[in-house]
Length: 279
Ligand code: R5P
Image (cartoon, rainbow, N blue to C red; front, side, top):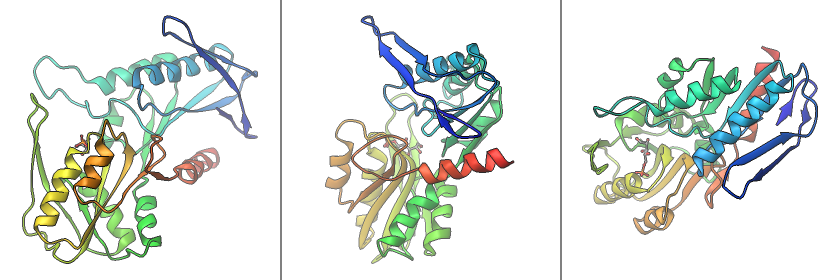
């Protein structure tokens, strides 16, 4: 937790009670201060979301005058509409809960769909880590690599990567069965033969999307295939499955700690906070 200006770190004691409930306590006064809480909400999502809400409440209960939440990975953002009859909109429930807890504004990184934030009960903004991920590959000597989106919805991400890499850009197509969760991927006329391809996505979860994309790219004669994501959830054996599918390297950010979190979000978040402070 950071207090600014001047920037000061507030230590937080936290523990888990024997029944699984979370407890937190701020160890310094926050009276009349603007507080920034940095808390990602990757697994265990529900517990991390509660901790974020408790931190905001503790800040407000102890006199903070403003609470900004910095949530590098915002859980539940993929349930941003009612896909099937009877469903709710999980991310809107999360937003209302955070607002009720005392959050006044929120900054996140590459939320699945930016439009989601318009429904939040407080100002919320998403920033992109894709240029940092693309820069990682430039540093490795892959300038001019082909930036590929695994589906049309991720094309805006691939375009951001292309602006750094300077090569070609394109997308595959992906359709998901909303009952079984199974996806069908296709890709036509991509002209990837002999090229270095980097697949950019917001999230890698089970790895199914990247494994399917790798198969198509290898069938079409790609020379080498890398993948980069902002949020490496990497459920189960996702990392092994992706490498077994012939992906040369998987790169993610530290929005979710993992083996492949090789790109830190720290400079991006620091820049956004500084701009906010002076804005
Ligand atoms: C969904 O459209 C997202 O952008 C990702 O493509 C998806 O969450 C990846 O999931 P998985 O790794 O399970 O295929």
